[in-house]
Length: 129
Image (tube, rainbow, N blue to C red):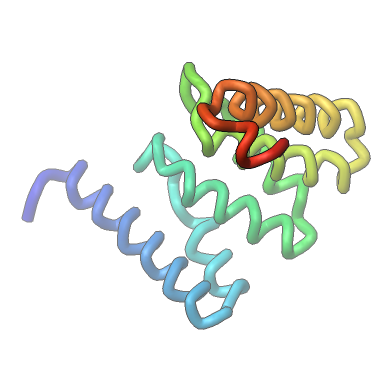
């Protein structure tokens, strides 16, 4: 049977899996239903699930509902996901007319990729990013 915490996490994982299955068969409305029901407290590091939820909300024209997921601070250090979140956050902020927030997010993404390009060994053979 497992602990209550194990059952709660299993419930989260099952709902997320059903959301991804809905995406697999191109049913974004059903996928959004599953992802919207996911409690953030069940998996604080399930960033991909929250990014997927935010993208589904944005695709449904519900940018203001997507922004809390996109504005979340992921971890105390930079991860590749944080750059993807910044890009989605910039697009959502732009659609909502929040120009300053959009520019801040775009600047973050440009700087992250710019720093990566300059620190990458052999960058000259690949060209600029």
